[in-house]
Length: 215
Image (cartoon, rainbow, N blue to C red; front, side, top):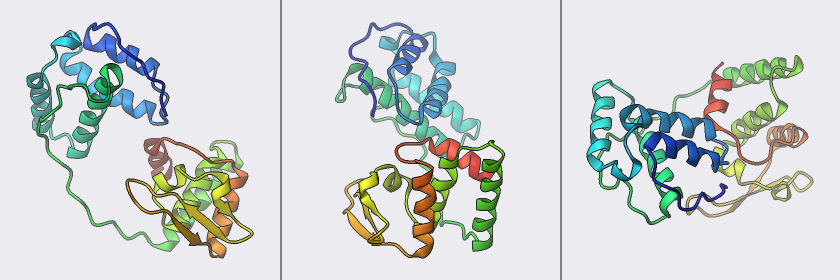
């Protein structure tokens, strides 16, 4: 969720980014700031009212020539669109409308041995024991792996949706998907117990989570 910024004076693009970020309360705030900074480098001193589709196309070409990953470019375009919609209204025009950009290819998920998943959990637990990691991160890691769940499903889950006594997780539908009731086995019960004890409910930053797990 985020507070709406409402109509704002149209200053330079850089100034508008700073004003926009003051109203942003999403968990991925750091990622959004980073994505918008990439646009600032391209046309930060230009009045936001004068930023055009040509500016966006030129920026994208610069990134493509610099071999910036398609996924990164896609995230930057989405961040730009989100900023304009927040400042000007959800149906407002944005300079990214109808601009084409390289889309990331869908990859076949890599197989991760169970031994690796267990070893990562041990490392997270060791960091947690010395106070270098909040317990919530290990709880999220355990639930995601034990239940084979997507992050969005865990983020949308309320405490009332997890009934350990009945061994059921009521999963809220996401992106048009149907809600389901997932029976929980012993490993999944153990994972949810860690999650609940760590009070790991709600949103988190996926980028920060990925960095922690990879480390």
